[in-house]
Image 1 (cartoon, helix red, strand yellow):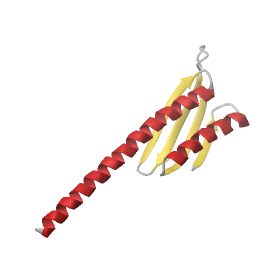
Image 2 (cartoon, helix red, strand yellow):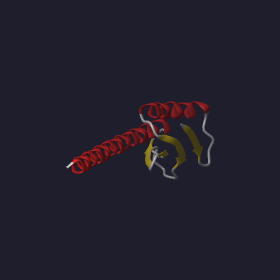
Image 3 (cartoon, one colour):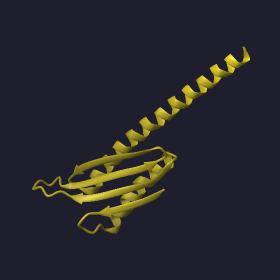
Image 4 (cartoon, helix red, strand yellow):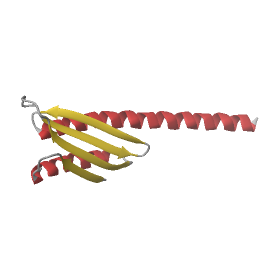
Length: 116
């Protein structure tokens, strides 16, 4: 899986990039079909300490999944965004199973009709 990390108007350090890459590589091992991931890190112009935004977009076959989270640290925002992406991946995977089973069922019914 190709991982692209982009920061808007600031420079990320190597440790943060490694942290994000490791987390996304774990997802890549769990779910097949992920083509690439784009991570955008931003600072929001607010006075509160929760001004770090992590936006993750996964390109998968047939869909794009996206999650945006805002927290006190980029690591925390990344963790929450990854959790949201994992939920979306689970739902997508479940839909594929249901679609496959329904297609399989239709094929069986068609075969039974052809045999009659």
